[in-house]
Length: 450
Image 1 (cartoon, rainbow, N blue to C red):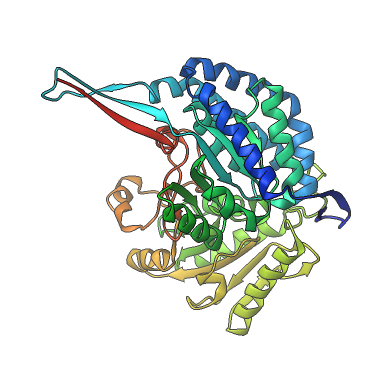
Image 2 (cartoon, rainbow, N blue to C red):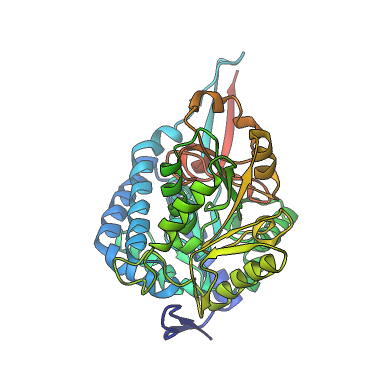
């Protein structure tokens, strides 16, 4: 038995009991039986259910947002936006999936040769709490449209959100077993991956969890996709529009109270703009409304759990002991951590070399583009980077220098249904979204007819 506490007021929201390993396998068997029929449906037949799901998301948007705000503290307006983004994802694949999954004719010495894309079977998703709807949808929707069935082990602290997602699929009329919620603990995941009916696994989460899941899957020759952490640099070059950069920087770091793998986590500013940027950035950060996530004008809510706020506090405090200086923020109260800007950074400090999952912005000056690239790449992660510059053509020839899964020019790094999403190095492997994402869990079958 475990309980979920509201991170804002520490009240107990609900209590749950993890299902047993035997019950988990029974649910996977339902997925397996459903796959025998679902996988045989044509793509247009599957898409009819996706259309129903879009209506279900619209009908339940406010309730889903409130559940998210209560369980992990996301400000209500941001929670609404997250649900709406799930609808956009469904609409994107509704328009494009049939084309993505169509057989591709290839000219060879055969009289006929082509490639088909066939589903694998039951896919396990291991999902995090920071975007409790979006992370699930971006994995599950393309997998299901491709003909697979999915079971999702969601983060325990958003168990209510997890139940609501399964209810959405039921409301949309999906056959039982196309989408199933697995209320299991992290220690039970290995047993589920090892079950023969599970053909592959996708995890979004920490480096430690990703390494464990990937090792189990690899041992059994099962495919895995890993979307892990990030320590994105936000680079402001000498010719940048500093006002736009400062405005974008606030959202890039502080959205979702800084709890995002693709958030900007290290701000690298050309020395000629450094003081001006600090002034503009600080003014905007200090204007952010902190408070009850249910209030519509709140931008910064609590972190999802007290222990997460304590970890951020520890990373900042250790960096200050090493010489860093806080110029605003730096205070913790239970699960709240005030938006923080910190300077006098060195590359050996926790706030530079570790992923900080909270509203903390370390700012460093640099003197040359080469130095900025070196600092940007000086991390074990490789999810994305933002570069602000007015010379867009010149920067295009230098994008290969960044060891990242994505480079965004004059914009914050974000996930978009039409663009592949994923990283390199310890940010994981594989891609979600776009055409790449829908083909991660399919059998790319070659057909050659002589």
